[in-house]
Image 1: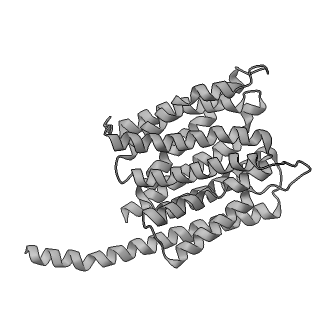
Image 2: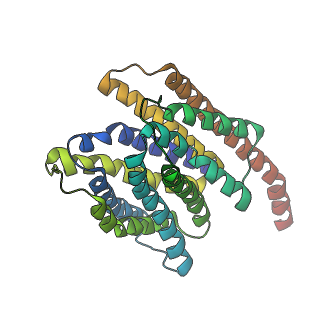
Image 3: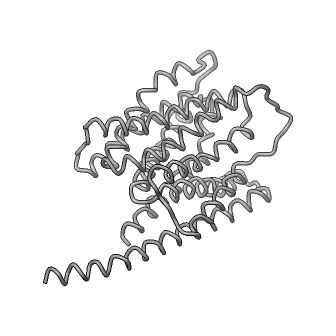
Length: 313
């Protein structure tokens, strides 16, 4: 039972951090600090989060070949997805891009079911289905007059969708091979390694805000993402990928929307309200399903434990 409570607590912390991050992420860019440089700041904030992780693990780091490969792979998938997204948003509007990106949990779920043989009960699958529907509603933006032609934008969007979905699977798989703290450390290294690419992508011909409302505000916002990512690694360590991925993806936007309401004083559309209700319902169903399965596993283990004790006596 302790394991079940652990993954839920990390999911909650991740949702809080990412929800607040989502509500504030646009502020530095609106103040004249490019999103590409925001990536640089985010990668640097991963360093203190990685140090905290190593401190928790008493400065022990897995450095065998598999640990380095899996950890760096998880970091590269996340970082490459983020960088490619910048290119996608240059040629396609957000209302087309983000509904497609909302499908990332499906990639994680498929990989977890196929390769990790993860499963859940009927209640859990219903919760997963409702979560995917909620993600669609929360990420949907009504189309305007902007149109895109060709399919290059679609390829660019599919890359981060697959990359981030695979990253969740790699996190879960890697947690079977190494410590979560080591995974995050190598994720940090991979993210920092791509800083030169983000700088190369930056248009320095336009004015850049280097004041408190620029990089310093970005650092305060991005550190939430960094420690939220650390909690996500722990969530995948203790929880199932087919539950953690849709739950975190569905609930984080809910908190972002609620915070945005207080900041901008705007009433959400009906589909957003429905998405919020569905996200909360899906989280309740998936949490209940895992709690029931944990109780079932405990009951199934009790006869074996009793038999072992009898044999020992």
